[in-house]
Length: 126
Image (cartoon, rainbow, N blue to C red; front, top):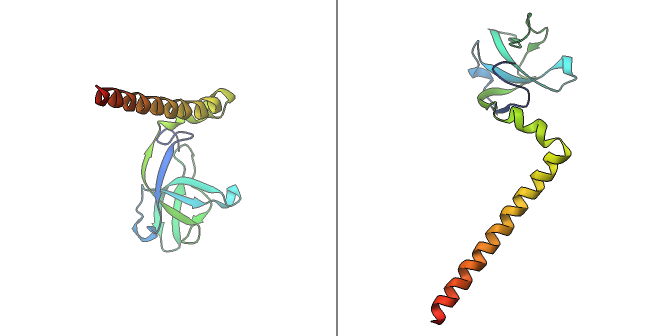
C-alpha cells in the first residue's frame, strides 16, 4: 500500500463496517494468497458478491473477491511515524532502549518524589 501506507505503518481498523464500504476505502481482509493472513488493500469496486480490491503499488486488481467472511474492517486512521521506529526496535540496541528508557523514567520519578518528600519534611521541621 505504499506510498500512502508504509511498511510498519500503524493502522486503526474499525470492524463491523462491511455495509459501509465504498470504492476508494482501504480495508483489511483475510487474504487467500497470504494463507489467510491479513492484507490491507484499496476497494476498486463494490459488487453484490463482495469487494474487488487492489494494492496501491500493484498493477492489477486482486484475484480474490472479498466477501463478508474474509472482511475484517475498514481503515479509519493511520500513521507512518512508526515506519522508522519499528525496524530500530527490532535490533538488540533497540530492545535495550525499549527496556532501559522506561526503567530510567521510573527511577527518575521515584527520586523526584523522594526529593520532594524530603524537602517537605525539612520545611515542616523548621
